[in-house]
Amino acid sequence: MGTVIGSGIFLVPTDMVKAVGTPGTVFAVWVFGGVLSLFGALTYAELSAALPAAGGEYAYLTAAYGPFWGFLYAWTQTWVAKSASIAALATAFYRYLADFLPGLQAPLYVVPWPIGPGGGPLEIRYGQLLAICLILLLSAVNYRGVRVGGHVQVGVTALKVLLIGAVIAIGLLSRQAHVVNLSTSTTPIPGGPAGFFVALVAALWAYDGWNNAGMLGSEVENPHRTFPLALIAGVTAIIGVYLLTNLAYFSVLNAGEVASSDRVASDMMRRIAGPHGAGAVSVAAMISIFAALNGSILSGSRVPYAMARDGYFFRHIGRVNPTFRTPSASILLLGVWSSLFVLSGHYSDLYNAVIFPSWILYGMTAAAVIVLRRKNPELARPYRTWGYPWVPIAFIAVTILLLCQTLISSPRASGIGLVVIALGIPFFFYWKKRRNHSEAD
Image (cartoon, rainbow, N blue to C red; front, side):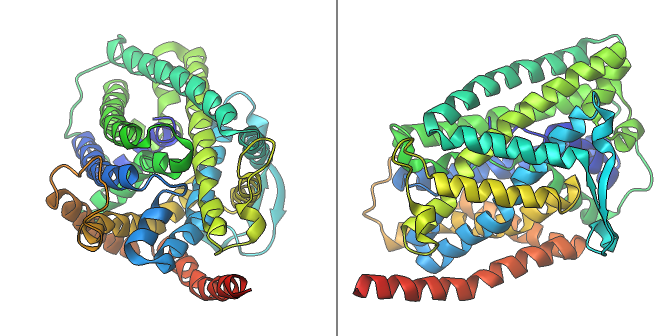
């Protein structure tokens, strides 16, 4: 839960209700996205129990398809998916902190070139510098050891769950709460499946991170039991939390108010308890985002490390710090690159850049369960996917539909994802050649 429940639940309901128009459809999207993520978790659980190696999907794709696809996964995660995800979380953190320090929203510098969102000038705000400092701080914490980062993660996650529980309870039990009209509409409403899939992308961003546990495979005790339990129980609990949180929002605010809200959780509490209530929920949101950000740095840094350890990246990125026993160079690389992403765009631009390339590789990883059942039937599998092969097949089929629709509705973000994946191809053959020369020597 620590790496999944972050900024999404506090921000994306606005985008979702704009896309589909009614609370009832928003709930349907949350359920659909949750079931899809659960199917992914059921599928991943078999892989993580059978192949508990650092890097998660990197190890699974390499085992199923060879090093080429494992490399492209790690390449994409390092340069776009994980780094943009970390940047989006840090950006969301400063947006909530701006409730207390409005000066964070003030522009610090405007780059006059047409490189900003929508092709306009790029505006850099004071809050973005704070977001960068937060990324570098948590990178330093995780540099000092997985135990240090893990203790921070456990403590902050526990506090986060308590605070979100309080937000849900206050919203549902307040005098301002009313019976939710599931059919109340906002206008205009995108028609047909297009709006549903736009909302689904937003929901999947909120669910994103359910796969992160497997990235720590070589550093977790008893992974054969831990990973299936963490994946399946965690995703199931998160679905419940998200549905209850949205029920609280729509019990206090109508669909139009949610659609026009910049920070829906804060606006809900402002309706109930005034500015002090809005401030309290902003603190809860920041704690939630802080936990997800720490967990993303902790897990994401293992991907370039695993790639370098196998000889497909700069050698020093695969080194382990002799004092702290962490992939310190990999942590620093991810922290610095994610900080540059903070300067590149707005929150919605960042999460749209994450979803498309990530779900291409999630679909391929789900297919790896089927491939490995045939390719390596003797592999020890402490956990076998429930509902095999229909659960992986359903996950793959919906993933293909999602990718096709995202390519149509968000061609810019999708195009960036495809270009980054394609750019990895020549680098793979470069590193493969260097690796072969090194082995020959």
